Length: 396
Ligand SMILES: Cc1cc2nc3c(=O)[nH]c(=O)nc-3n(C[C@H](O)[C@H](O)[C@H](O)COP(=O)(O)OP(=O)(O)OC[C@H]3O[C@@H](n4cnc5c(N)ncnc54)[C@H](O)[C@@H]3O)c2cc1C
Image 1 (cartoon, rainbow, N blue to C red):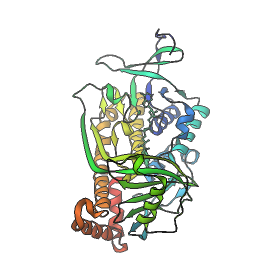
Image 2: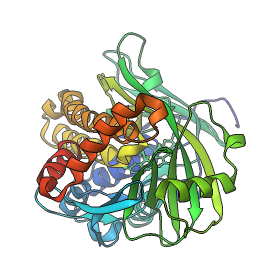
Image 3: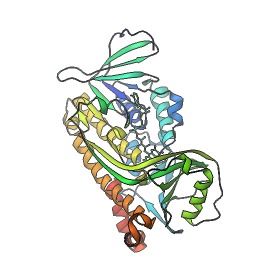
Image 4: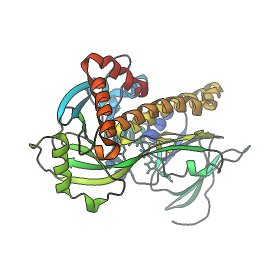
């Protein structure tokens, strides 16, 4: 970095730390409403636009973008969010719809982030500062908040009214909150998933499979790519999972010998855990998305929960700035956490059940048969209404 001299302090209304899906969505809503904001991002634009993650914006997220008249610009076509549930290879297909019957939209996270960049930076002349380092939050009682950071030109200071911590689980926002303020609630499931991004034709439905050899899931990630998830031991690493073993296990767990090996682009291991921090605000700092909570990938919902937080926070900031009404900001943490705990309830329930119903060496054959009976009931057409309501508990 260049000189250590701090440049003259600039002023804005909201500093957003992190240009991921939540930071860019919040920035776009604020800019569209005439509220000044600056986004600080430690990576470069190309890196962020390449990051492969979620695949579908759920019905609630679609409604939110529609309300901002942005759905057609940012999202792609309507998609029936369907799950092909397989028990030892036998499949049943179910559609997940919003509580009002509205559909989700296909839009991978990197497509959404790319479109948000175009909208915010290129169309709205929004201010994202990439490749910055040393972000420090100054949020002392009775003082105006200030963010300092450095880039190739030296050190800078930004005074603001509000800070949105959209910098994920390992960012600086949550870490800036003094010890003893936040409580961390976490649940370790005791197993991991191997996530493998593969070059393979997309199936028409997401697949969630349960088998005696463990769980398997396939989620579409673009026209020719899928992310496979395979349940594995917490201690497993890349040396345990060659590409050949990945394909052998996929064929075994889906009971489908016709599946061909294809290129594996990347693979990594995710211990399954749920985490919630509370409260998710401290003075003028508001935590958003993965900075505030994590869900296991079984529920495929982290991005959509982050969009929910943005929906609540953007409305609260607008009311504070435009109407001098801070009630929405004061209740931000309570509002978001009520929704998050409902979703965590669903995520733990479905994750436990999917895994109990799988490899019997884990919890025994008795638990396996109970879990399979529950899954059968859940996915039975006669109880489809029950399935619908169980999904809705967390999803809207
Ligand atoms: C492999 C994988 C698959 C997933 N699949 C799904 C799915 O199917 N459905 C779903 O809904 N969710 C899914 N998720 C979860 C989803 O991707 C996250 O929940 C979502 O990205 C959270 O958004 P966010 O804006 O909070 O964080 P992020 O998108 O991670 O953005 C955080 C940003 O902050 C930046 N940053 C971090 N630290 C700093 C710092 N100190 N200074 C400045 N900037 C900083 C980062 O570079 C990043 O750009 C998946 C996640 C992974 C990893």
